[in-house]
Length: 368
Image (tube, rainbow, N blue to C red; front, side, top):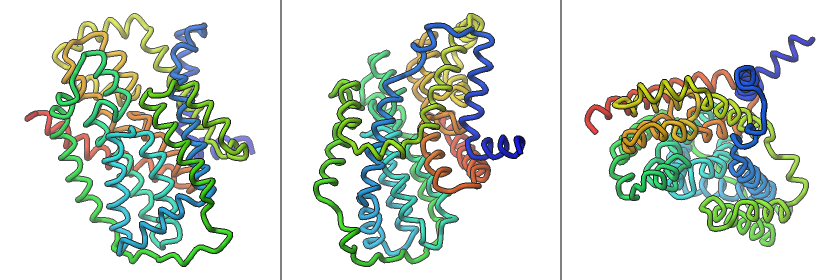
């Protein structure tokens, strides 16, 4: 019974279990101390919590269902739906960050494909959305946390970031378009008129759209994050607290502890001080696969002045393993919560598609 419980937990929460295990293992090398709290990005955790509440509110009050119905109405088939959703994720990630884009559009994708007769395509489309968010966000300073840090740290211009990343972003968009052709042209189901019980509440729609605006302002530092998160937490319906994916938040905390412990080791600092020069692209890409690209950026920026190679490496390094980008963990959790028993298949397909994009980016690096 105990073995069956452990296997079931590992199958349901593989990323959480592995993250916690690695964090605990790192504690053997770096004993727990007050510095642990400093290694956790509480702002990211808090904003993610707020966004989960908002998306749950939009879903509970059928706003996402209404958007899904509208999308199914204006597109002839599910391939068109997939194209629309991936494109929305790709371009919106440039402005609202890759995390927010996935939190917004993956639940919409789940609703659109559930009951369509093509749920087998759901996994495929969500993975493509994840790649779209990770790559599209690379084009702007505000698209993802690592770009915002590099923009400030090296005093880069938005034009410089766009110029350097444009070949990678455009080539990825072309490959995404080709891969979307594999989605069947199944006719999209047309939804009937909403019943009275299904009708949208204008008050609730306004409430959660306003909270979404507060969250976006918080992401862009227009509102201090403690204030923004407090507004969302207080103004949201308390029943939504039960819908928050606390295991995802725990995964992030474990990964932050792991990264903080590794980066504090003198041997790690010595290695990068000696071997990083001239290898910024490949080392940052490789390190992103095991630490995630944001912590990799923070660590490697201490040892190099080659901002542009680091910019390319950590952005294309967001593709690859599941933890190469924290945004990828978000979409995985959203999918695995909705669909049980397919996590291993998801991870396999995710890895294969991401390797394809990595090969494309590594080839492009020879010319750009």
